[in-house]
Length: 362
Image 1 (cartoon, one colour):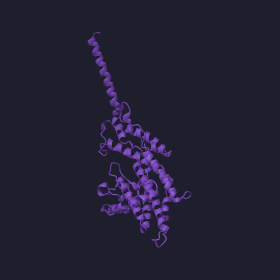
Image 2: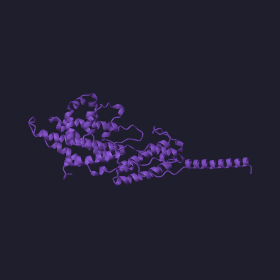
Image 3: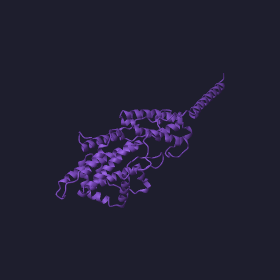
Image 4: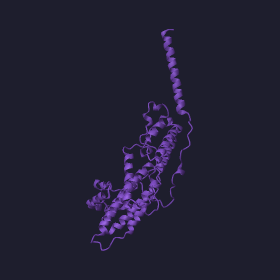
């Protein structure tokens, strides 16, 4: 056989092999894989109240002007011990007073008052719709600072305790009804700040009781009302299973939106034609079963999905379901130190709860 004939045979063979590979790739990527049944549905999450939900009063970021807290006020909120917090508030008393003279502060506190007036606080955010969770996070910080400001005044200490008691109730409601990991994490941080501030205000109140400026003993009822809210902190809210379910539903909603041609996930730039809903949801079902089991075992890092390998880091990842793998990677939750910070906050909550109630109380 001549060399040209051999060359032609090799070229034909290579073309056939390439054609078979392209056909196999096309079949693998365009085959209508069955979409597995969802692990959970909305029925597995707490219902959203039709009325009486404080969350309904939290405005979008575009509709509220938030004041910028300087670093000195932010540092007060970062105090881990009540003595540090009240000392910081006393040291920054002028800055505190100045912050609450701003019109924006008055508007923000009016929102807090509207939220306080409702019996429930259930964060309800539909996928891809603006969700003002950060707005509430900032409002909560402002409310804690307001409570500290009031707590430094002997005649307003009762108001400070009432405000903090309501914040603790709101935080508890958010944790008990959480529908996402972001909501859970923010509520834990908020609750820790409120508990430290509560203990700080009570310490200041105890100091004021013997102050000769006051011509009466302080009424113990406001303290008891706050402690009643602290006693209602059921340890079950520490469990992350509910947040894992909510996160799963958010991921599934993203898949349905993207595969349906929606632009709801603006950051997704993957090839939608090469996205298999069946393979993608199969991957998430496997991952979220593991996350849920980790949540049941109290393994915060694994329940958050931290440490999961991105499917785009696997060699040859683009050969099968590249659009789905890019979507999976886009939805991964990876913030350095999140699990450690959340664990520390949970420990801090336990410590403050015990400090408020006493070792044998609650």
